[in-house]
Image 1 (cartoon, helix red, strand yellow):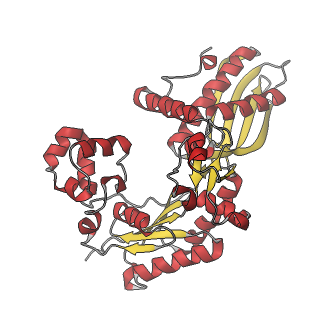
Image 2 (spheres, rainbow, N blue to C red):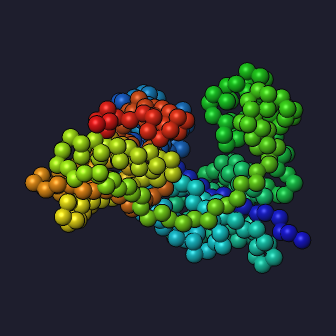
Image 3 (cartoon, rainbow, N blue to C red):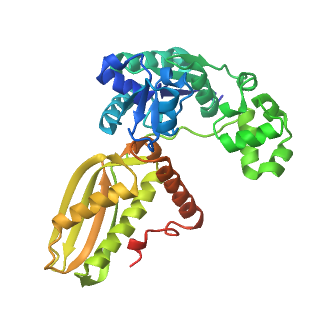
Length: 382
């Protein structure tokens, strides 16, 4: 008889805020905002004390400061966040049989079959306590037969708590929750559902699946499945990707600096887009130049973690300028991003504006829909 799936979901509570509190214990218990200091910046993360004022991540910093003038604003420190994320990853790696790192602060652990030996709830709870003891970071946990229900259970267990949904109780657990609690239900979807009179997950689960398909197509079918607690998504084993790179060998050797700069822009945009698609940030850039005589030189530089093209481009051009000998013909140029960590654009660009974030999201959406090079910088079209 096949073992029933058992999936634990772990989420580091207010991760960025709690890392800052570990660095400076005097900040604990205060309303804290992590992000840029300018009015045009956005909130990358906020403490539970700040959330009580109605503040949330991605909110314009100007509005957050108006809601809570006494809040302390802290610039982000991706190096520290990466350090603590790696620490927690190593703890889970040393303990769990199979795990997936979904983001810098979120993990799934497959405990299927372990009831024979330990008891899944006891095992997963001991792991949660171990993470807290060794890292000092509060972490919440949900346990159920699939990733979806476990994730929702984790959200219900916060802060620093745990919740098990016994097998067969998935629908009754989800039923009374508002539709916004379902992963995949964003602001627009929630608004559409509420216009239909759908406020709870139970109501959503009772809509005929054919109607959901007619209303929203494939998304409607997936919403119906989730509302009914159905999720077959596997836990994907975690393997750290070391780097992402690209090279370009020219048809003829060149010293045309405008052409070379255009190639750098095009290449940086291409692998910058790949970084964001994989929800990765890079902490190191390497530039490679091969001259006509096949002499190959490289130069690398550690950078604050990012996946934003305009920040990457500035460092790429700077490194290229320092490496390039204008007297020699160039045969090949290459770019490599390494020291990759899980994360995404929005939580990393603490000094960016809401408009910048929306621009990147729009560009990535267009390139995903119509092809990777559909929208590019003019400077990369030479």
